[in-house]
Image 1 (cartoon, one colour):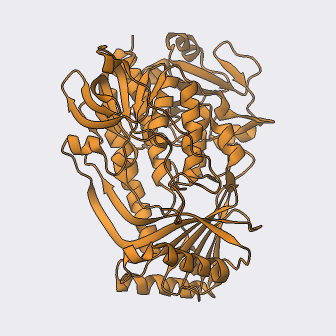
Image 2 (tube, rainbow, N blue to C red; image 1 turned 45 degrees about the vertical axis):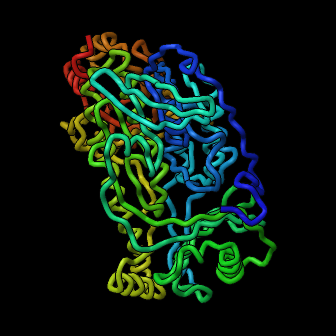
Image 3 (cartoon, rainbow, N blue to C red; image 1 turned 90 degrees about the vertical axis):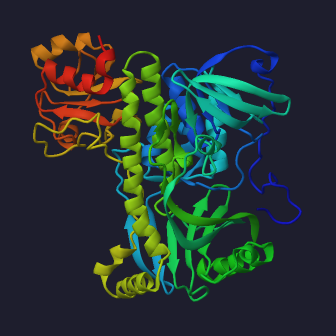
Length: 554
C-alpha cells in the first residue's frame, strides 16, 4: 500500500521498469516445446533461469505482471546467497548498491541488552549480510536474464491451467492478445504463496500459522546510524509491541512492528494509523528527530508451511510456492535462492544426459530437509519475537529482564540468523571415512579462503564438479583424473599442475580444511560437498561421482 494520491509504482526512490507484452509464436500457431518453463519472475524464478542458462539449458519465464514487485519485501541477502549470485555473474551490482552489515542490537525497556557479531574475516569476499530492497534484487536479476540468449521472459502472461503426463507439462497461458498452450519437458513453479500451479495440481502447504501480525513499513529518513539489525522489546513508546528496524539503500528505513492481539488489522493499516505509529517509533524508539516520508507498507503474518513433496512428476516447486517461513532470521528469500540453484543444476544435468533421472529424486529430501531446519530455528525466533501464549510471553519477558543485568541471559535474544543448510543425510552425500580436524563436512558448502588481493578460492569454481586437491596427488589418482571430464581440479599449494588449475595454498588454508598433502574435497555444481578424503583412490572418486550422477556416466 502507498499513501493517498500515489500510484502503486509511484516510489520515492525507485523507478519501476515497464516490461511490454511481446506476442509469443504459439499465439500464431507455431508448435514449440521448451526444455524448462518457469512460472514466476520474482527473484527465485529468475535465479533458477540464470542457473539453467549457466549450465546451457534454454528456458522460458512467465509472469502476469508488467514490472517488478512493489515495496521492499525481502531485504536481507546472506553471504551464501551472494556466493550464488557470484556464480551467476551478477554479484557486483548487489554489493555496489547494497548495505553490508555484521552486527545487531537488542533492546529491552529502551536499554541495550545484547549485541551480536556475525562471523566475518578477511578470508571472505562478502559480508555476512547485505540489505537491499527486493525491487533492486529483481531488477538486477531480470536485467542479467535479458542479457542471456538462453532465457526468454514473457511478461503479462498469466498461467491459468496446468496438466502433465509422463512426457512433459502443458500450461494454459492467458495474455492481452488471447490464450495459448505452452508445452515443456519440465516446469519450475516459482509463483509464490498463492501458487496457481499448486492449486492446479490439487496441492496444499501444511504446517502452522502463528498468531502475531506485523506491519511492515518503508520510510525515507536521513540518518547516520550504522547498518545494523535492531530489535526493541517493551519500549516506553510501544510497550506491547516488538519492533524491528533495518537500514536500506537510498535513505530508506524498514520498520516492522507487531500489532496487539486485539487490534483490528484493517484499521491498523489505514494510512493515518500507519503515520501515527511509525512517527512514534521514529521519534521515541529510534531517537530520530529529522523529517521523514512514508513510502510503502504492508501486513505480515508468520507461517511455517510446506508442501509434503517438492516434486510432483515433472513439476518442481521452489521458493514460496514450496514453503512459507517466518521473516525472523531472514530465511525466506535466502532459502528460496538455494532451492533455485539446487533444482536448476540437477534439471540441467538430467536434460543433458549427464546424470540419470533419479538425480531429481534428491531434490525434495535436500530442500525440504532445509525447510524443516528453517522451521526449527525460525520457529524459535518467531515464538520469541511473537509469543503465541501467555506462558511463552512470561518466559520471554523473564529472559529479557534477566539480560538487563546478567550477561549470561543475553544470548536468549539471539535472532539465529540464516546459515546454509548441510545435506549431511542427503542421498548424494557420502559420510566421512577419514577423520578431519577442521573443514566443511560432507553435505556442507565449501568455505571461502583468500588467495591474494581480490582473489578467493570460490572465484575458481566452474559449472561442473570441483575437486579441491591439496598438494601432490597419489600417482593412481593423478592417472585417473583424466577420465572425469565433469571435474574441474583446483590444485592447491602447488606452483604448477598438469592435473588442473594450480592455486596458492599456505599452511593456513590447509589447516582451515583440515587437509594433509594428498587430501581432497569433491564439491557439486552448487558448492555442496559430496565427500572428502585424506588419501583418495581412483575408486573413491568414481564411487562418489556415481552416487550423484548414476548410470549416465560413461
